Length: 565
Image (cartoon, rainbow, N blue to C red; front, side, top):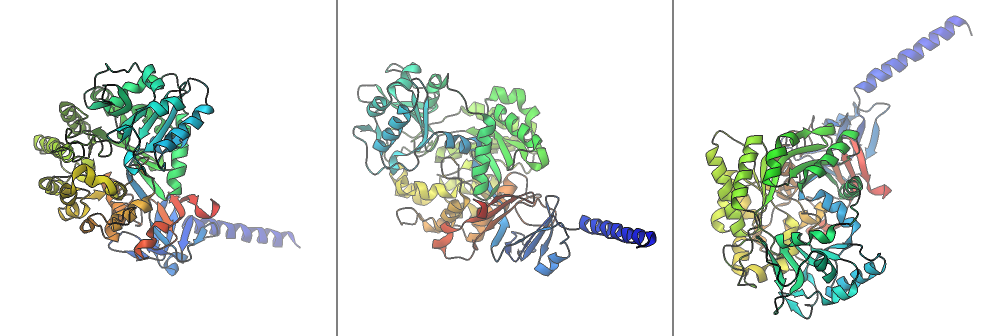
């Protein structure tokens, strides 16, 4: 072969390579084909295929529409008819709590107090003396029998203390609003019959005035000395465990309901070094003094390729219904001497509202009881009235579980977001009438339909680790309101399937000022996609809980694949 022919051949090959590179520069990195694509985009509600380039949606349409974006380096996934939706956005949960829950005793599925004691006894047998034993997830209303003896259905610490005499034990209620301690933990914390109740909390006592081991709301802080000396887990490891769990459930973005500045520092470090796979939207939870000093330095939007945003403040005005800590307008039906607890000073709440306005943060208030919600709406309205030039603030009430009918329209009128959790209604439903009485349940408990009709935006979530972080379970609760006992809780409050899907996608994006970059599948938005094995909008309702996650895609990268797990 002559030199001229060789050179000509080389030139042709180089030209072909150059043209291929030029062509590939306009092609997709990833294409999803043959799917049932639910876009949550009213202008283009359904499609068959999606093209993704550089972490964003390049094109959406039919298979033939997307063919032109397939190049030699394009990865292609044949969905084989599976359903692609905008990535689930967890609208209210506790990110580090999800990770920490995997490092302690899981008490969510125990049948009774005896099982709790047995689990602690086994843990103590494998621990060195003095080592702290932690657990979370128990709920006295879900046990198959009441412990004997008990106070308010809560056991006395005698058997727990006998099971772990040499190790402090702290067992957090599933709600996160109460802690159970053994004698060792109480002794280390200097707690005895003379210890007074703190503001916003209660030490539950027996007939002789002695602590039974149960510390409600702010009283649980008295147990802090029992935690001293325990080796804290690696914070990065907690994040890794949390994101692994969350991604496996199809969640691409996670709205974290309260982290400290120290925890946010870890998130930022991981976002910047590329090790944060999930997208985090974070509420700061600190004292008014800490907020005043540091808030200005911590507002962050889209750090690390949109992996971290910090733009809200979290506060709790009351506790939880399960722990009798939610603040009510009238006493509890099953505890008539109590109307719950106000857990944060109202002056501090007003000061926090002013800080939020000053620094351009959203204000997210945990409020569960009807009085807690009314007081929160009053504070919000006061702040809005005092700052008439501030528009579209999107302040949020976290939970809004029990509302007086007079306050339901205020959510729409004030444009306050109701950040609720569908699964709470069906999880709490079997015992909620005991707490509130049937009349209060009917008129104001978990009133999704009434809030939607009043013009409120509902943002959905799970409140994990209070519940499993699974969005499918919360979606099912939202559309069915089917409780574990086979009964339906106030069926008139159901969401439609599309309303529920929007509450887990575009509504949550809106609740974080992120609807322009996520929450629907549109050209130019982040390529955050969840692939389900079945159509969540059309399968029989009873089959919804059996939907599985096939892929979790964040920024065009497959972060979870059901086939490989």
